[in-house]
Image 1 (cartoon, rainbow, N blue to C red):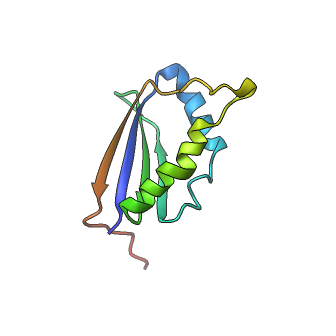
Image 2 (cartoon, rainbow, N blue to C red):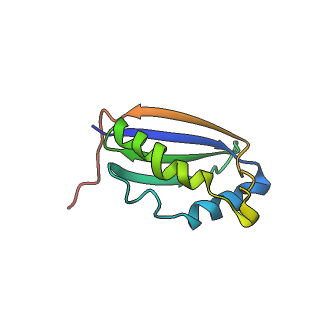
Image 3 (cartoon, rainbow, N blue to C red):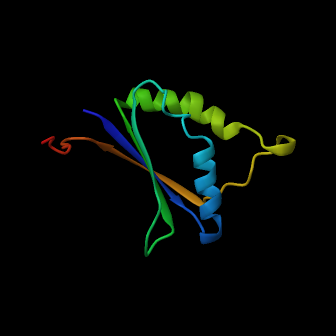
Amino acid sequence: MSIVKINVLTVPAEQREVLEQRFGARAGTVDSADGFEWFELLRPVEGTDQYLVYTRWRDEESFQAWMEGPMKAAHQGGGEGGERPKPAATGSTLWSFEVVQQASPKKG
């Protein structure tokens, strides 16, 4: 079964819009990665300043290949004047899970 990676990003309130715009601007960069299955950016509603970046992959090897290739290149790119823009998040933690059960809506 698939694996899930959840990147927990601590984002101060004044940086939320910046984070969401950056993810929106690079929409599609993960979509064509081999083994990629799903992406969601989850905005906190109450009680936390942590966004969740949810991705699902065919296997660990697919995720690692993306991390070492396209993701690494995207995060090393320079902004204006060749400098990287300041990160919108002040912290990041990666959670890893194996999918052991799943369900989808029944079509009626």
